[in-house]
Image 1 (cartoon, rainbow, N blue to C red):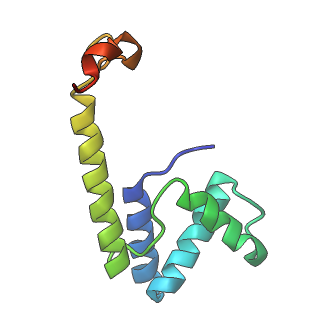
Image 2 (image 1 turned 180 degrees about the vertical axis):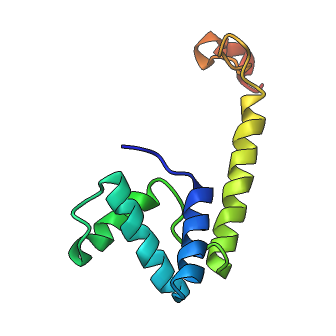
Length: 113
């Protein structure tokens, strides 16, 4: 299955909203329907909209990008990606972390007296 970016989804929602003069909820539904068709997530019928939305929600945030919920979700997503990037800095070039393997510890020296 192809991947889509959050930015592509957000732009498509906003474009559908403006171009077709849709409400935010209608723009989300139209975008989900379009992407489900493009990504072949089902038969693209109304009965399958819930399944398409669920499949897309595994890939991206499907809230409206300008809604309060959407803004908060995107802020948390940016913070999460930033945290992952910082954690990546702790991985050494040979892809091993600087963390000591528990099996290498001498348990006797770790016990408080």
